[in-house]
Length: 471
Ligand SMILES: *Cc1c(COP(=O)(O)O)cnc(C)c1O
Image 1 (cartoon, rainbow, N blue to C red):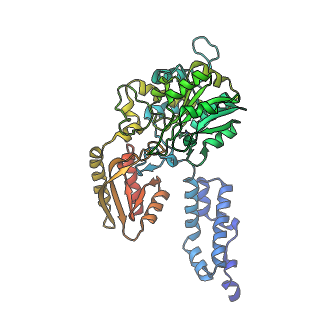
Image 2: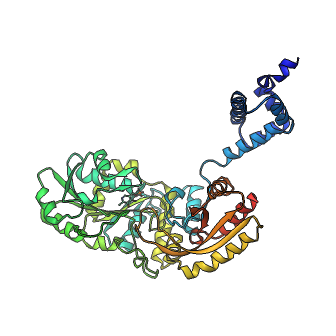
């Protein structure tokens, strides 16, 4: 009898037995029964592991079971299950276009437009007035035309897709010439030479890492050449003895040689009328309109970087070039859905209506340190009021545009440096990420730094709730 009681494995209940406990079966209101079964198995497996490692004996297990340890462990697992997947987060990092946090938050009117079409049928590929079939991005093309001065536009899933479509359309099975200094890697998974290879395009790289001239392109042209490509080095900067072929030079060369020209702009800075400019903050960031004015055949950029809209790849250019891309069967695999189109149309309409300053990403970039100071002070005071375990200090710091836009650009800000007694900065950051809502912040000099620049309306309260829940 005694021997049996001291064997902790025998005290572990069977899965079926656990599921009959009311405190456990109550979780069926929150997760499906199948899921609950796997969570119970995971708990029992974890405990079995503790026993095996000598960390849990019969007495310990008995005490744990008696004090409701099973339900407590399952509560944590059910919470993790509920909180996984795509849920809203608070971005207190100060990185405006934070790729890990979904880049640009959208304007409320754009988000509302997305919700409206998501919930209903929509006039996607039928013309309301003639009743005939039309193209899903006709309106987007018109809006892009008005904003950039290009003859036409087309939209696909992201800028990587836009580059793929452009390369494949104009140079599939043939060769494209690109400067050696512009063979960029964006965020690990987008490497220009790899994308070219997948598009079936042979890369001919010309010039040197730091200097490429029009003559280098010209000398590399053969019968196999189908395209001249330029890529904005959006996430790094070369300084010193450098030279690049400008968009205007490339367009000129293309016309002279009878070859199409494509410029991957990356961030896609637009300076719409009536909006405070961003160009002075983000020097070296080329403007879409300027690239269009060069007379290039196609220009690609992202919808969710400096444009401040939904994830998309936008291509503007000549009507002929855009039409050729539209006829490529690959476009069918890369095209946008109605929800994204609705969000982008509304974003572009806001830009055209002179309401560019309302686009959240633009407003966040433009916020000055003086404007951010009172927000930092108020938040610091509120955190200070949470209790004596918290220490706060408001410090001058810098935020970043993010998403590889404008490398080296630092936007002056004020941050709240937060510490909590008994917690390292890493532990504090981890518990905030695991909280509800998840909060993301930077760590510097062993303190968490909360930057008000990237807080959206209502985020201050959510952030305080998350901190309060830890107290
Ligand atoms: C960001 C970027 C890309 C990739 O754009 P996504 O929209 O993330 O697919 C491609 N080229 C350049 C130059 C970029 O800056």
